[in-house]
Length: 274
Image (cartoon, rainbow, N blue to C red):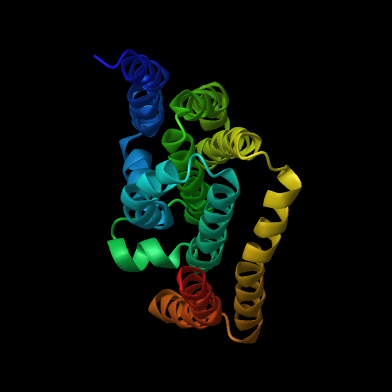
């Protein structure tokens, strides 16, 4: 019996204990607030379906990075400089791709759920862009979280999600009573934002980096999304498309915006592995 290995495994499992329950509480929050407390099934349905569309960046990067990043990070755990570079590259990749997806989807506004779900389903005006902001931040959390699990610190991610849960319920319930779905969505953004800051601080501390190092990567990564946003605002000023045309403009503009950064990332990856 390898006692050090058993001790390490036990410590890891204890750190991860409770994380599934916390996430279950977070994901169940809309149903508990809108259905159980407010008795508003219509708003719940519109919120949930719009939320599923807005979570596209998070879903994509969880599927792509989740199964790949944790084993890769675990292999680099004893080489912190390489691990830090790999993690920062993943953060930048999300900001370039996922950030641009978030900007394009948020710019579509209510047109996206109306086109996808149909006009009979209805929307809460202005809700979808807020949910897109939440989805973008959650996608970035999906890049930070695997690092903490891979280096044996699942308790840090669990604590961050616990803070998120407390904010969602503590701030979200009164906000939903006062401002409805818009207030609750804003509370979820505050919650996921707090969890992201907690996780990022823990990650840079473990990697013996500074928040300034991460901030420099974030600024470079956000440049693509900022340029795309300015371009789309220009389109709005020119002819303000709506409906399916608005979606088509967002897809074309988003694809053109990320084309060059994606090629640059691919070339850099090939150079690094050559």
